[in-house]
Length: 316
Image (cartoon, rainbow, N blue to C red; front, side):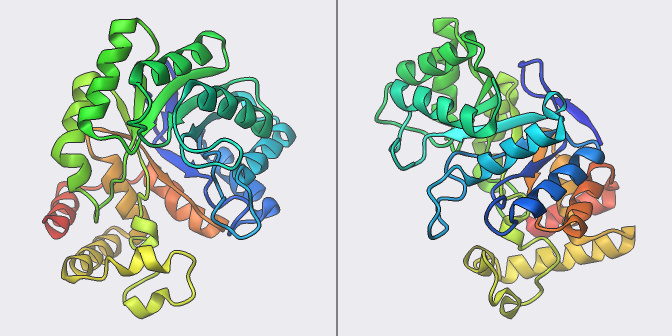
């Protein structure tokens, strides 16, 4: 396990971030707490969630994941050892969609209550809000930091241009700035991050914590054919990758895993962790057996041949 600095925030996080999107959804509360315990016992300290998790489930209202995590933090006594990240900005019942001052402040209070904490360690703008002036958004985040309710702020789903503009606005105002970017990035989804965002993050010393690190499970090792996705919760997100390129990536992933005595999911995450800009790869699990494959990526060092084989297979 490696701890890496989170931008200039003073926080250090493990290179595997445990995704909380499944908590209260495909992992019930008891299973979620078992996963959190297993992760913490292995040395992990970085948990990712959002206020909208898991609003997409029939009967859910959002906040389910935060509530599950909050109960675990209280029951486990591990609050001081964990870096907890959550998000605001996507459409949430009673809050709406956007990054106005009112939405950010109300969203933070709601998340603090569900998480049962006095301070959010990393608070993300879940997606850009071009309708609200950047100055208003950033001033609201800065106020939360100054008030001690948030330690650091981050951005998710931002373009390089908007991230640049946000950093410039924060610098001009002398306020808190985005210290972490959470982009879509994995062996199947490379161009969106590598073409522009990687350089922007390097220039501003912004840490990168990737989401969909296993391409919605496509890189987990569970699938070799499109038919293998039948009945899976994320079947749609996985099926789109069954292209000539996708099959080439799977072949390289399985070959590398076999040669190194590892597992495909472990290798896919280790490849991400080896990328210069990435400080942490976010991935979720619904069983401790799955989680062990993810945890092993924290210590797996891919050799030059493996890195080249995976890069070549996923190019294009």
